[in-house]
Amino acid sequence: MSTFRRLYRGETNIDFIGYRKRWYIASGIIVLICLVSIIFRGFNFGIEFAGGNQFQVPARPGVTLQDVRTAMESQGIEVASAQGAGTGYVIRTAQITDEQRTQALSAVAKAAHVNVSDIATDQVSSSWGGQVTNKALVALVVFLFAVGLYIWVRFEQKMAIAALGALAHDLLLTAGIYSLVGFEVTPGTVVGLLTILGFSLYDTVVVFDKVEENARGLLGGSRYTYGESANLAVNQTLMRSINTSLIGLLPVAGLLFVGAGLLGVGTLKDLALVLFVGMLTGAYSSLFLATPWLVDLKMLDQRYRLHAQRVLAKRVALAKGEAIEAKTGRPRAKAGARVPAADTAGPAADGDADASEQARVDTLAAASAPRVGAKPSASKPTGGRPGQPRKRSGGSKRR
Image (cartoon, rainbow, N blue to C red):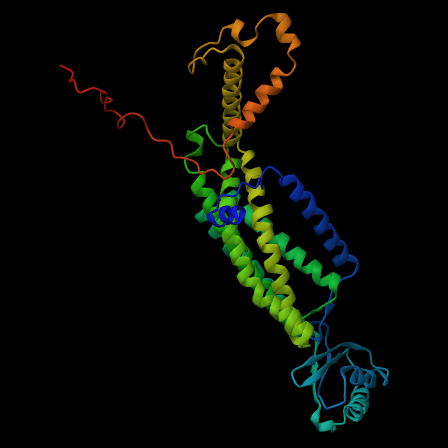
């Protein structure tokens, strides 16, 4: 229960930033698989994009979906997809002639025990699917531009780059899953794809807002590096990310596994799958990719790189002082004071023989680093306001 309590309070100490190379490798492998599937396998486009015919057949007792599909294929017509929809069945085929359509209607009506007039038919041109695709691409470009500009203005340029990179990762993984599974790409898929963009960015912006709060005034201190502040922000928002993901995934999982899987409502599959995969990858990328990418981009700035070196150098110096105190029994020298050579090294023979001394220093340096789950304390000025003398500690006054 203590683990869940720390998770609820945002006091976990998972090192997301320290193990970022592992996340990069895992994501790279998954992205590579998705790219290979998209290039060589492609997508299963619905008739809205590829063009074709659709037959809506009422369901009758004793008539199964396979019976209707077999009747259609008996006329030499290739069935692109067949699924249940409400109180009937939906059969989609490629482009066929009027004669083939008439023969198909007769065969299906006979197999389904209905009249030909009870079967609703629709014919869709591939040009309509092209128009839908163009509008979706325009909407995607406008959305990415607007969101990138907002994050750039609200936060900074590096955060906008990291957020858009995580978003591109989510889109690529979702598209790759569709290619691997073979689900139809329909206008519902496009709508769901645009929906998950907002969910993914919402989770990323929440984490970035906490990163900005923790890193405020960071360069003026020497206690935390930028990577540690960012890692602390991820741990502090971990419970919020989990709650948001679960609340969003539970109803979508109901649509996908119960509606489409158990009840056989096939019209929900295209929308439910894209929402489920997109929300899952969005929660993953905001924690394991977006923030580590932000840290890597920040380390390209010389100010943050030098600041990290100063923080680590200070910890090593403090660790060496603790090691000297433990070895000699003398108190550590004050900050800025020079440690005598006899105290730092000792006799030459003893210093050369003691091979574990450096390991002790390294252990103390690691122990002196701040806990990942600890909250940084804001440094307060020791003196008065700039330009004013400090107050004396005693009650006497200067004459």
